[in-house]
Image 1 (tube, rainbow, N blue to C red):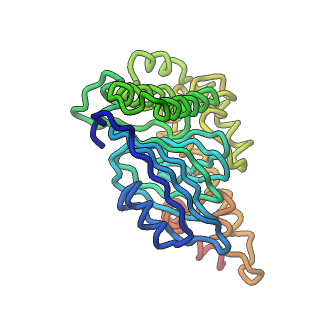
Image 2 (image 1 turned 120 degrees about the vertical axis):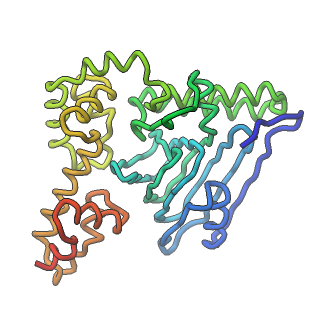
Length: 325
């Protein structure tokens, strides 16, 4: 993405189709060539996509038909989403998170390798270059690349922040000054500031980290762990909810888990859910129609290959072996 210049408004494109090959081709072109779309359920409605390309950023309004599984790899832009309707579950290899209407999320971050499972999803997104976020944060991009600390926002207020920023940007870009480069440039910086205020990354981890380190006590860990053990079956369990239950900031909870368990909070949630899937596999009867994929999906693991890899790493054999015993 390059800076938008000149006096013409940002380009608006609308696309509607029920041809799944066109869906794959178009989404790959918009979101990256490594976005792979899996099976789409029968009787799906049409895909609808509106794209505003402002040069320095791109916003989209996407309606995905039916049930879809996608994979993102090596996409270098930062893409933030706000769910309008339906649900999406993202497995980034560290944690499995489920999002519903009103939730904000990080759809892609540089060097991601993730899979997602969408059901009747409509989502608003904005894509920004990483160097713009670094510039707004006042951080030089040299040495170790920035890291995303959580795909989920820092609480419900943070979700509303990014949703409001997107709405304000839409208003700016639909007004009479939309073609002015100052309007577009400042809209891009506004979006970047909203992203930095909503999601924890190492771009903004400076002095506040000291207070979070101090708050990462065993008491915080105990409260957070107890809450996870009680609520792990709930698909909307998030870092913000865990932190609120532990009376700590999300970063303090992250530090506590890293310090004492060498794992992220949502990674711990995945571990507990994997144990639940293991128990279900042991108790299930394949002769009665039980399947590995259905049990995995019950616990939020929609990518069967990744679930099998997690499972083998922990239990030493495949989930199919457990089901068959």
